[in-house]
Amino acid sequence: MVNPPRPHQPIRPLWLCRTCAAPWPCATARLALLREYADDRVALLVYLGGQLHDAADELYRLNPHDGPEPRQLFDRFLGWALIRLARDGPRVDRFVVSARAAPSGTGSSGSPRSETGPAESR
Image (cartoon, rainbow, N blue to C red; front, side):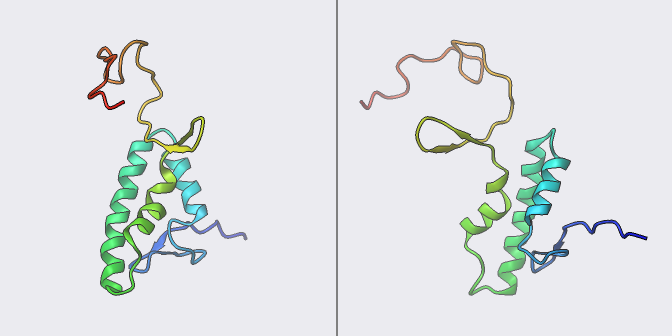
């Protein structure tokens, strides 16, 4: 009899993967989370934000002098889940909530675009 694969869940308060001992979320956990939240990226980011909050607190309590830097934790928990869009030139990170485009001639809120912008600094 073959055992079903073990889920890649965190061992708390260490925040290591229970199955592969990599920092959680490990690559397998990330793929499973992307599959689970395939239709709701915002819910995935809310979930991961809560996990980030818990991990920051628990890892700091374990070792207040040598804990991970905030940027490292952000990249580990949320950075990978943000949608990255390539533009001409350097890579731009953007959070995309909806695939629907605004009507042409309007901004994302549906209001007319300003031709001049906020303050002319050119």
